[in-house]
Amino acid sequence: MRASDVPGVVDVVNAAAERAIGWRRAAVDAMGGLRLDRYVAPTAEHVLAVDGDDVILGHAYVGDGDGDGLVVSHTAVTVHPDRRGDIGDVLVEWAVNDARQRAAELRPGVRGLLQAFVYEQEAWARELLERHGFEVVREWTHMVVNLEQPPDAPARVGMVTIQAMDLGHDWERVLPAMDEAYADHWGTVPAQFAQSTPARPSGPVDRTYSNAPGFCFLS
Image (cartoon, rainbow, N blue to C red):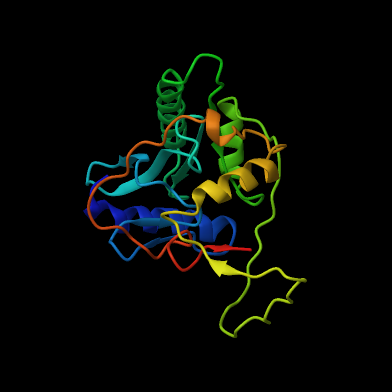
């Protein structure tokens, strides 16, 4: 996907989202890249479906999830609601094949997973994924806080303090706590057994994501 393709992808994703759920799910980020409502790693693979006039009709990606390297892959497939046809099937087939290639690089005995996230109202996307063998395994709730007004200050508990996380040095303290907190979470692999995360691309970094310095805290 070229930088010049990003506005077209944003238009397709938002057209589908507004039709199904009533709000926008994509924007152009501070670096001119694609910002979706779920974080997508810079190392993700993207493909587009275009017509004869080079107009973008659909978009799909496969990316590694949450620092687990090639253990859990995420995907999303979007097609403009007025131009669907069999485009979605082609994009899902690409995503599944890409994830299978990633899974082939896993250590022996480690199971690869491909997750897709859809909202309850996105009936078309859910039916598309189920046709290709996906099945519902759990549900989650999307919650939003309007920050036009400052939220109430959190109540302090005992001697607990909150401090900014040093993303360059605090992970050795954070990872054991995350392992314990998510020990029963489906698809989780303890940090010491996870594959190494691929190197991120060099160059400018968009620090407007919520996992950027100043948005992560320790208690």
